[in-house]
Length: 277
Image (cartoon, rainbow, N blue to C red; front, side, top):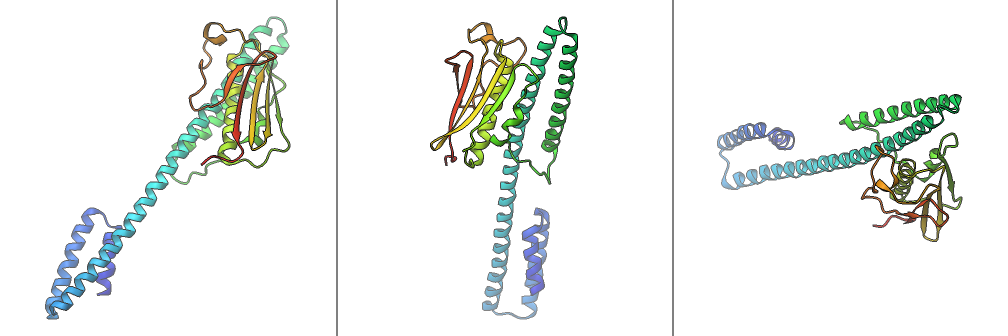
């Protein structure tokens, strides 16, 4: 009887549809023959039937819970892949913007300072190699189905890596030393806003020579400010160089963009230190 119960539970818990039908029919025949051979009374038949149904119900419950857990895991993986796809888009857009700006600068100085043009070409080559490496690593993660070790999202502490002094425009990053430990969604959102604002400044703002990224705490909030010294006069395509980028911020961004009081463009965003539920 114990062997029959284990067989029945295993069939319903892990078997396929065909295996469940055939196995259940086999178990039913074995149980009926056993009861007939032992001349069991109605009370024994009823008790045995209830026991078998309880075993089946238990197996169904555990199978349903396992399926539900697997579905949740797939949903989590899909959400991670969407986040990685956005990361890939923003990272590649940032690097390509830097490459485009350096290429434009190289075209300007090629006839005046050939040695400077050679430095710019070397910087473009280095930036292209970094872009390809990051893009291939993310695409490989997006293609993998199982066993993916997702890297943590970048945050405010990673903003200094965006600074650069050897290209035009130069990028300066200033972080408030009193910044608390931010909630993970807030930390990642600030980095994304800063990176995309920098990308837009490099790609879209004319005559910009400097971009400043400043993050500081204000009470229970954190203020991000990205400013440049480019031209603020609106023109065709909002002053965007042809062939580079979009003319309006992505809809998932919440930053406010406008002319700065001292010239240039300013992007500001204020987020709570703690993520809102």
